[in-house]
Image (cartoon, rainbow over all chains, first blue to last red; front, side, top):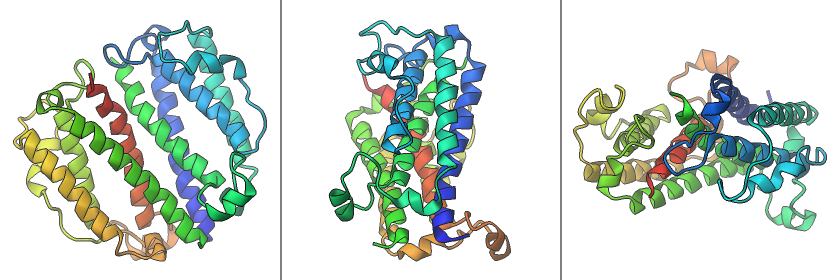
Length: 159
Length: 159
C-alpha cells in the first residue's frame, strides 16, 4: 500500500465504523424514543438525525459529487430545535439517512487515493495553492469528528 | 508540503481543536456541575473526565513516549460509573487532564511526519508488515474520534 492509500483507508475505516455504530443505535430506537431529548432541555433525537442528514447531504456538493438530495428539509434543521416544527416524520428521516450515506458511499468508491488530496468545491484554486489542507479528505476528517460528537449524544436515547 | 505532512497536519488540527473545545467547556463548569450526570442515569461529568485522562495516559506508552503518568487512577475508571467510589477530586482531575495533554503535546512535536506512519507499540513488527494501518497516526485518529464522542456528551453538563 502507498502512504496515500494508507491515509485514505485510515480515515474511511473511522467513517464507516461510526456510520455502522450510528445505524445500530438508530435501528434499536423506536420513533417515540427519537422524539425524546438526549438530556433535559437539549436537542431531540429526531432533530439530531435531521441535522446529520443535512450535513451529510451538503458533502455531496462539497466533494463535487452532485446536488443535494434533500434540500427541502434544510430549513427544518438550520434553526435551533423546537423553534420551528419539523416537517418530515421519523420514518421519512430514517429513509433519508440511509439514502444519503448510500449515495455518498457509492461516490467515495469512485475516487482514487490521490484525488482525496485535491481541493474541495468551497475553496478557490488560488486559495488551495496556499492552503493545501482544504482538500476533500479533510471534509471526511471533519465530518467524521462531527458524526462522532453527535453519536455520543444519540446513544443517550437508549434506555 | 508533502502528502505525509498534509495528512499529519490535518489529523493534528482536529486533535488540537477538540482539546481546546473540551478545555473551554471544562473551564466553564464548576466542580458541582462535574458531579452531575450528562443525562438521567448516565455517566457523570467527573467520570467522563477521568475516563478521558486514562485513555490519553495510555497513549504515552502506545506511542512509545514513556510510562503512564497516572496509573493510580486507572481502576477508578475501568469499572462502570457509580460502581466504585472515585478517589481523586474534581480539582485533581482537572490538573491531571492538563498535564497528560501537555506531555502528549510535547512528545508529538518530537516526531517527524514519516515517523507517524511507523508502528505503535501494541503491534509486532511481523503483524505491522501485514497491517500497515496499525501505525502511530491511527492512534491519534481513533483517539480524536473518541474525544469528540465524549465532548458531545460533556457539553450537555452546561446549563
